[in-house]
Amino acid sequence: MPTTFTFSASESSGPSQETPLSFDYPFAYENRLEIRTSRWLLTGVNTRSAGNTDRGWLYLQAARDGQSTAVELFKDPACGADSRVATGSADLSGIDSAAARCVLQADRSSGLAGEFYFEHYAADPSGPVAVLVSLCVDDDLRDEYQNLDDLGDGVNDPQTGLARFCAAATRKTLLLAGQQFAAELGGFGAPEHRSRLSAGRTVPDYRRLANPDQLKEAAVHWALMLAFGSCHERAGATMYSQLRDYHDQKRKDAIGAWSLALVGDPDNGGQANQHRSVGARYINRL
Image (cartoon, rainbow, N blue to C red; front, side, top):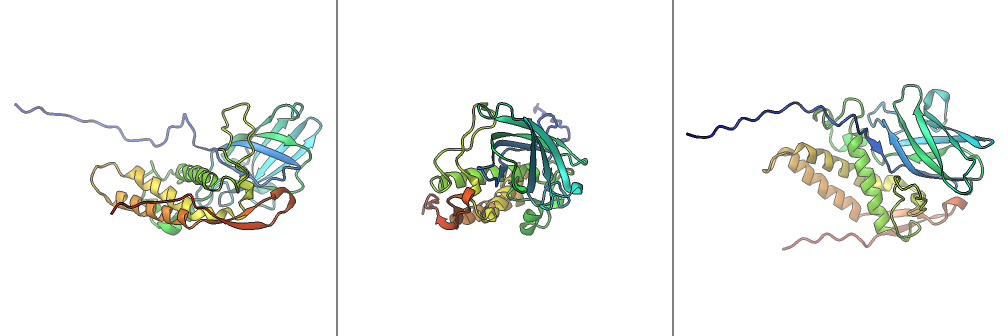
C-alpha cells in the first residue's frame, strides 16, 4: 500500500514585525571639524515614491544648548517644518571621553525612527548635513523593471515597498566599495559595527564619495537580484531565476566599470579625483 504524504502550509505574513527592517549603513556628509557621527540605524524607512526620504537622502540639523543638542531630520534640503520626519536629542556632557547616543523619534507620522552616535561635537553644523540612507529606492528599481507591483506582498511590502532589498543592496555595495577602494577611502578596515559600544572607527570614510550615484547602478541591480532570488523557490529554472541571473550579471558589469570620483580631504573642500579599482576579477572557465 503506497504511503500518502499530506502537506499543509499557512500563508506568509511577510517580514516579522518583531525585528523591524533597519537601514544600518547610512552615513552623513558632515564636516568633521564640526561634528562626527557614527553607527547610524534607521527603522521605518519607506522607499516607495511617496516615502519618507528624498530618494534615499535625509538632511540633519543640530543645535546645541549647554550640555545637550536637539536634532531634526528632514526629507527636503530646504528643511521646512512640513518636511521634518524625525527629531531627537543627545546628552553631550561626556562627549570628550565617550560617544553620545542620539535617539530619534518619528515626527509628523513619518514612521521613521532610530539612533546614531555623536563621536565629536565641536560646533553646530553650519548648514543642513546630507545623510545618505539608501543608494537606491523603488523608483530606481522601477527604471529597470516596470512590473514591481506584480511582486507579492512578501517581497514588495505594502507599507515600505522594496526597502529591505534596498537596505541590503546599500550595505553590500558600500562594503564592496570599501574593500576595493580601501586606501582611497581613508584606510583599510570595515565600518564600525553599531553593536560594539567602544566602536569609533573613522574609515572607510564614505564622505569621500564625491558622487555616490556612481554606485547606484550596482545597488539597483543588486537589490533586484535579491528580490527576484527571494521569489525563486524551485530547483529548476523559472522566470524569477532568469531575472535573478540577469540582474546578477548587470550588477557585476556595473561593479567592473567603477571609476569613482573620490575626495581626498572632504573637511577642507578638496578636489575629487578619479580612481579605478583593480580588485574585481570574474573568471569564466572554458
